[in-house]
Length: 450
Image 1 (spheres, rainbow, N blue to C red):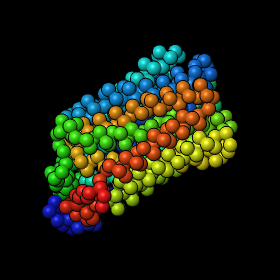
Image 2: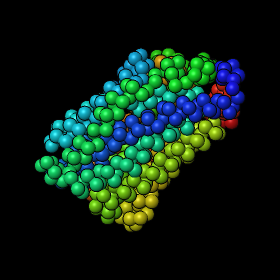
Image 3: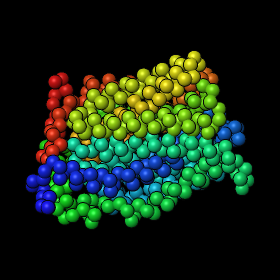
């Protein structure tokens, strides 16, 4: 059997090499994202008992849920730039260990001040993980193979809902009073431990760059690096962070992703509350309903990534997915007091649409930026846009306190998400992608009106 060379590789051999890379990296990264997501959003399930135990209002919960993103915002760009300097495995190990410890410490959040402080620290430690993985995958996959990897990795957040919902429901119905602790305290303890274990494993398992990969042959390493080097020097991509900041493109993507994240964070932190509002009060039942909805979301994200890689298209896919998410949010708001099953069906549509938009969205900025601009740009887009994760839950909680209903807040979030669709269709240029067969596949920009 001939060894693969950078200059000439058959499509079948290229597929074999990237399949090896995919199965080495993506399943482990998905596992990390599952435990990270569970630790981030388990507050949505804990809320069902914690607020009553501590006598807190919806506004206190909304502020605490959202303040996570302030820490996230402040430390995300430095974390991503550090990853580029010291490598992925050291950075991701630090992040994973930190959020695992803070997640366990959440058991002591018995006052609003401690709650706010620990949620802020959780954001500080998790800052850089998600954009860091987005950047890390660009070290291994060229653009025309990246959406599938993005989609599979990001679907882990939906799979986290499949696992985390029933797990939190079981803990909250069976662990109350054990060792003198409340059921919601046990949720934080049990769900924080895997993060610490996986953080240690990260240092030994991950490989920073293709040329470090002992699990690839030398010829395979050369081929992967050769494709990435050609893409790195493609015309039209910005490499300097300062140049990227001066342009309009990065700020357009920040605004688009802000609109998507406003919806995603609302669904994450208030999805269980909506299910409980329409009549399903048992935490275990709520957990299983959210698990089913999140399973659909995972399927949507994976399918979106496969379709984007096959077609080379990301603009229309992202805009349509965001529109479906907005439609589902609006439907849930209108049906919340009319039809329990209709409201849950709309919640599912909102989650599938919103989550399907996320992996394909990242194909757009990654066509414009490389080098330091990619490292800082991806983190900057994600960190600023995730401020919506602070504002949206706080707004929903405040409106729920003042009106007694989630419906007004859901309608506002639906209006914000539909803005993402409008911005993409009006301002993001079209692209056509060369076939995936060889190493010369690079995106070619077309005018927006074509």
